[in-house]
Length: 423
Image 1 (cartoon, helix red, strand yellow):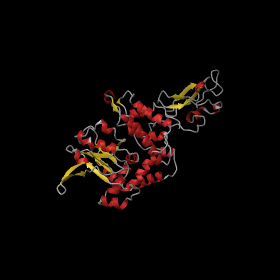
Image 2 (spheres, one colour):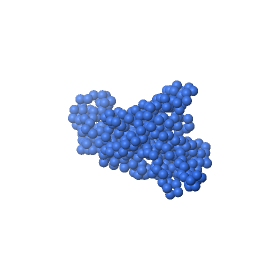
Image 3 (tube, one colour):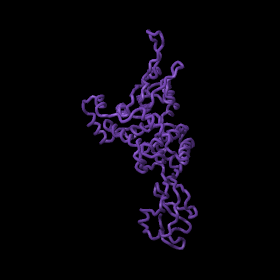
Image 4 (cartoon, helix red, strand yellow):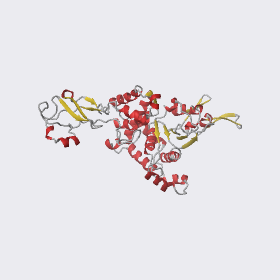
């Protein structure tokens, strides 16, 4: 808490009579509020962060002014904690964060399994931490992932390595302009021996499906995935064919400015739990990639030789069901609801997020809490995934696009306007 020299218009602590001074926890700006407002919440006019107004400190005058400016004196923290929206220093739009470090849990079987999966995948796949964690959160939350990136970043290798480590089947579909829906789902064929039509399953009948360059196909082909992603079944000629669980779609798309691409329908985009942006690796990561994969080794033999299956589809489904019992406080539910609804009121957004976005945030927060060994979710779990869960569900206004606004920046600004609860 900042102090000023004592005078006729100041109290014994050197503060203006009837006023309490404190620094914003987010941007450091000096704020003032009436003493009567102590204990209530205040919003910083500069960064819009919300924090409680501290009680006045009677002996604050004993603290040197220079030291107080660098080390504000605040009252002891309450038993519960206050978490702000992601600060500018944190990578906006990233799934990764330090919630697991700030709110560590116990060494539960789920946490141990999560650590083993990361360790095994890192033996063959380098970097792209956001992609790895985002895919695992979606898998254990019964969701799907849309990945936007340029070619050559190892997405196919990642899905194959993940399938090997998880003990799941892997499938890949290369989407092209002439791809038909039956090429994805399968179709009935006439069996000359039995003189009957028999359903021939398509490549979608797998567990980890890589839909490569999905935006190179027209809308009628995209529509074939709508029922599959939501209901985990394929209906042909009135007969439903269920898919084996777990089932995860990792769809990649080139940036829309690339030649020969189509916009995905909003109905399909909304079915993806996350949209992850995969970028070029860091310099040291790319050097490690050259060391690992610069030889002439066959990748198939390396996957079989170097990676071990650490779980099974049955265990994945069991953990997914157990994650539903992770406690989510009513105040955290209200916070998620406010964040989703605020996207529909934000002036730069022409279209806000749907209720499915709130469900994705709750499911993802539960899964992250389980990964960190906790049986309860905290606001940091929501903060880690909120931008990947919302960035593909909002549409900018024409004015915002002309002005060059970025979705991630606007979402970060919007999050700062929502008060984060104490839990």
